Length: 107
Image (cartoon, rainbow, N blue to C red):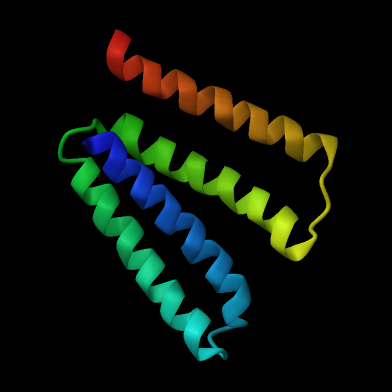
C-alpha cells in the first residue's frame, strides 16, 4: 500500500507542476486551485507513504517521478524541446528511482 500512496503522491506532484505553468502566476482561477490541491495532495499522500517507507527512499522517488512526469508533460503539452541531455537526465533519474526502490527489498 505505501507504494500506491507514493504513486498517487507523484501524480499529484506532476499535476501541481503543470498547473503552475497554466496558472500564469496565479492569475487564472481554475489552474490556481489545481495548484493548491495538487500540492496538498502530493504532500498528504507522500506523508502517508512515509509512515511505512524510509524517508531516504520515499522522498527521492517522489521527486524523481515528479520530475520525469513534468518533463514528459512539458514536451507533450507545451511543445518544450527534447535534447539528448534531457533524455540522458531522465534515464539517470529512472535508473536512480529503480535502484532506490530495489534497495528497499535488498537492504
